[in-house]
Structure formats: C-alpha cells, structure tokens
Amino acid sequence: MTDKFKSSQILILPEHMDQHDHDYNQVVITLTGQTQFEIEGAGDIVRAGQGCLVTADSRHAFSGVGENKILVLNIPVETAQDEAITDQPNDVIQRSQSLFSQSRYFHLDSEAQSLIRVLTNEMSAHPEDLLLSKACTDTLMCVLQRHFRAFGTERFRTRLNMDAIDQYIITHCNSKISVMQLAGLVFLGESQFHLLFKEQTGMTPHQYVLKKRLEMAKKLICDSPLSLIQIAENCGFSSQSSFTQAFSNLYNIPPARYRRNKL
View 1 (cartoon, helix red, strand yellow):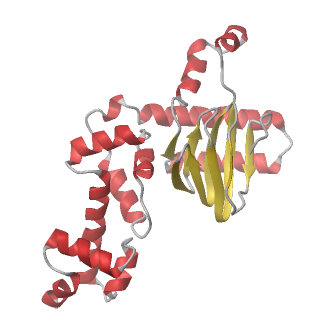
View 2: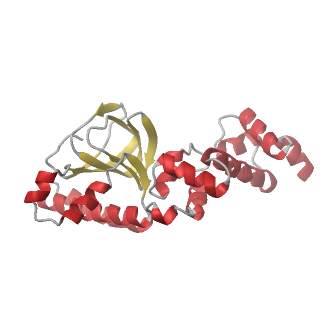
View 3: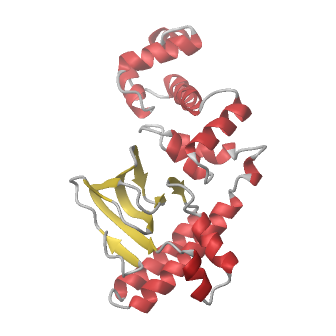
C-alpha cells in the first residue's frame, strides 16, 4: 500500500496486522470480504461496499479478514504552490482536499458500488496502464465528493436518515456494530454523528442498537423455534446471560418466562 506513484491499486491484504503512515491522503474501499483498519487508534471492520479516508501522516494499521480484496486510491496533498501551477480551478482542488479534513469511515450506496465494480474490472484487466489508473481515481474521487456533499453537515442539521440506519442494524444484527460504521452511512464524523443522533432519538447510538437487537430478539422468541442461545447469537449478544440481562432490563421479564407466557 505504499506505491505512491500509482494513483490506484487493487490489493489483497494479508491476515497479519501491518502499519505505516505516508505523506499523501488515501482512500481505501473494501471490494470483497472484510478488512480490519485502525486509524490513529480508532479501529473498525470495513466490509464490502464500505471504506475509509486516511489523511496524510496518519498512523494506520490494517489486515485482511480471510479472503479479501481492496481498492486503494493514493491522493497527493495539494499545496498553495501546487495550486499556482496547476490547470485545475482552485475550487476543484479545494473540493478534493476538503474530503480529507479528518480520517473517517464511510458506506457507499448500491449505485456507487456498481460503478466501482466496473472501474476496478477495467483496472484489473489493464494493471500496467497508469493513465487508466489515474482516470479511474479521478472518477472515483468525483463519486466520493458527490456522496459527501449529498450527506453533508447542512443536510443533517435537523434529521438523520433513520431508515438507512435501521436497515443497516437489521442486516448486521448478528455482528458488532460500531458508531463509526453508523456514522459512515451518512458520511459524518463520529462525534458529530453521536451528537445529532442523540438530539434526534433521545438516546445514544449504543443504546439504540441495543434496543433494536432486543426488539428483533423479542420477535424471534414469538415467531421462531430457535433456542434462546441461538436467538442471543443471531442478535449479536456475546452470551445468553448477557442477552437475558439486557432483555430483563428493557422488558422487566426474563426471555425464558416471556416465551412461556406466549405459549
């Protein structure tokens, strides 16, 4: 991941953790499988269709989780001197650099993922074509700029897209869900997302995810023959005891008794 002169690369990460930093910005998008990233101590699992922005000089660690494939875009840091000699308008340069105000994780919609698949197929077919690599990078940066504008701060000063957040929680209910992943759905930083989320819902993201897990568990207790330990696993709890405690705290009845009462 250190080939600075190639603007875009398709790589497979090994399962052992590696780390480095570099003097250019970077976009990493998981194409298949899962990868583990940690940027300045903030770690997360990055699944297919998700990615992260890594600002220049940020120390970051990374590894693959089983079979994986990632797209890496290397973006030079523009300086005032660069702007003076480039043919690009200043607003284009500033718009590109504004994406890297901070390192963050993000989630791409199906339309953007389809475009990325087309471009990466072309890159894979012509790996030595540096002009194609640069063109693909420029196109993908435009896509990211569009997404970050669409999900920018102004749009979400009043409302977050809870439908997208709820769907993500339901889809990934059986695994760990971090605030970073939820913030990435709406292209916001973690702290800003946390503040807006609590203002809108009256609870923290962690409390909200826990409530959604328990709502799904309650439905499974009523509508499925799964055992309580299977329900706990399917809803992302580390053990049946932690599930029982959380369920009892919310509904004032243990899940086993709740099931008996429903029979």
